[in-house]
Image (cartoon, rainbow, N blue to C red; front, top):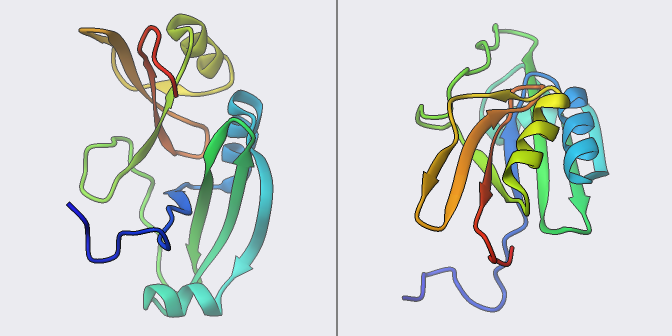
Length: 154
């Protein structure tokens, strides 16, 4: 089914995750998945306040790319000159929370690597016909998933 805005001129540009601080997220996703900074802006105030409709809101944000992935990965850390920013969510199942998922060639090795680099595993790995999966939280607060499907491409 074609959507109203689907077609050759529409492209997915980025996935964005809110974090408590961008530097830990940049280090983690750079060290573990090979993302590199493409664009970084600290202290964006007027534009983010206009974009969100929230006066006094300020953010740091970064867009990262990796030769291994077609997507742009973006992290935003918000703060406010007016209001307190809510504490980061510790669970990915509340409305508005999100995650990105990486298919990995060796599940157990990938889990060990993300933990060694500071990720927090949220629960237990699950097995399902043809694969395994686990949720984790990276330094800075972004949620992500690792999945493994033997013989799967991407």
